[in-house]
Length: 99
Image 1 (cartoon, rainbow, N blue to C red):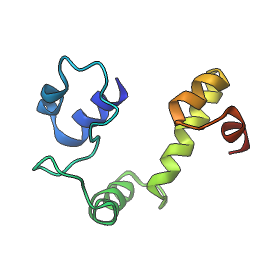
Image 2 (cartoon, rainbow, N blue to C red):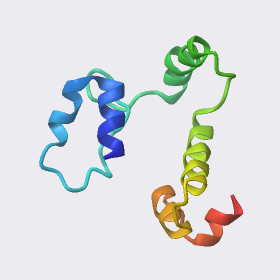
Image 3 (cartoon, helix red, strand yellow):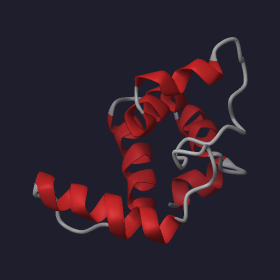
């Protein structure tokens, strides 16, 4: 579900069409170029992400900081640590609680 939302946000309403009927989209690109290829992370960060942060009045952060925010919000909203571990893709619960 999250990948579908992110793909739609990033690439427009038609982005989800290529995901229809797939049960596992873990290998699909969430952020992709208009040609469907992998984006250069530095280019994405400087040309898209930072300007969007500025427009929203949000201080400068790293893209990776969003990952930590996601995990923190899950915990704050009562998600089990096992669920958070799985969502974050951590190898063990210990990794999750150490971060």
